[in-house]
Amino acid sequence: MRMLLPLLLLGSAALLPAWHEVRMGPFVVLSEAGANPARETAVHLEQFRHALGQAIGRDELTCRWPVTVVIRRRSAESWPVAFSRDGYMAAWPERGAPGPEWFEALARLLLDENLNARMPEGYEEALAAAFSTLQVDGVRLTFGAPPAEAARTLAWALIHQSITTPATQIRLRVLLSNLANGAEEGPAFRNSFQEDKAALEAKARAYLAAGEFGTIPLNAKAMDTRRITVRDAMPSRVRLLPGDLALARGDFAAARAAYEVGLKDRPAPALHEGLGLALAGLGEDAAAREALGEAAKEDVEQPGARGLVALARLTSDPAEARALVERASAVKPDWPEPYLLAAGQEPGPVRQAYFLAKAAELRPRDVALWERLALAQMEAQQFDDATKSWAAALRASPNQAGRDRLVAARRAADQKRIDQLEEDKRRRAAEEKAELDRLKAETEARIRAAEERANRAAGEYKPPAKIEEWWDGPETKAFDGMLERVDCAKGGARLHVRPAEGAVVLFNVADVKKLAVIGAGEATLTCGPQNPPKRVRVNFVPESRQPISVEFR
Image (cartoon, rainbow, N blue to C red; front, side, top):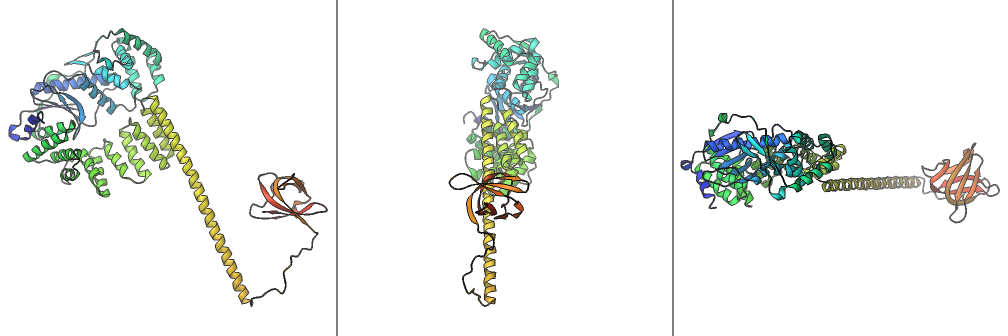
């Protein structure tokens, strides 16, 4: 808190010192130390961005949120980029430049914001470490100072060796550009260097063991530093700085105090937003909802997207929360967070997949997001889209272990889907059988009722004697067994019937047209093996063993 007291004084309009602002690319430099430090810092940042972009074949690295770098008067404090109320923030010392860790964090942010695919494991980290020690002196750039020993990995050695060797600079740029665009590892190395990855890494291993790391000048971005516009910073922005800086550092108590000072001086929606975010970080949800609600009023011209999303998370009414998310996506359409929150608000997989797809388009390197999208698409039976999402998740995975896990996860999801389909099929079959049984029972009941009514109308007729079965043909015998095969030939047939015990019994049918076939709908004689065998009763004349009828049981 003691370190933050000078910042809190910024909340008083009467004590506001002169602040200068320089905007260049995604960077906003705010300097309390004068115009020259603001200009020099902006040039340093722009040259760093340019050099890193050239290394991966990108002329212009962008960032969806502004990166605000703050220079305090008589301050040596520096800390790397961190997310705050309306973008990224970082502290820069009044004299000199921050250390390699500061630039390594910035490099990782720029790579994450601009690459669509993951480079092989360790290469993005190595690239960030290699450029973290870039020396910038106006428009003079020097590459090659080695980082801390722990950062000198095999991938770093390959990158360092290739850049400091003029003959291979362009080859490395082609390689990193192809990897950044999702090219397969093996072909990318061979096409760029005409050597495979193993051979290149063997050279890098020897280079690393030798320990002789030279430097080389790099082409700087052409610019006239005298033409860089330095303007006075807006007092409204300066009033927000203490809270925004504390929020970026995760010091929610200090952020709350700073925003409250600013609100007492001159209330503004952005101050309410910052206060609400700080209160939410402290777990004071009711007070956070009130502050964020002030920042999200309908008459606020430019509400903050982060504040709208935070308020949506604290809102219990689904319709109101959905409306807040829609406003946030309109304010910041290139930010995936509103779409992720919208997906969580949807109960069904179709709408979930829709919002997750929009988020994945904006965050193409997020393995977990692609996997979540693929699972939602499978549940929504969007199988072609799910296949594409699984492939995107594999491309976004930086190592083989992650890819193996994804393959296993997809197999498990496929098996779960197959099991569910089988279960649905069994359930539908059971429901259909139950419905047929019900209809059959109802039909039989109606028949019995009709018979009873007919009998009553006929005077309850009763036969005078027992009804005897009547048959005027030859005497027959019955044979029960399983019909295994029917051999058909010239109008006749041979039935192969296996009894419960014993060998198969053959029955010769001279004329199948005279054979009575009795039974259910499937009671038909088909030539060839019966698969599966059918239970039958064959009524035949004993003397000739000639079948009279076949009754399917």
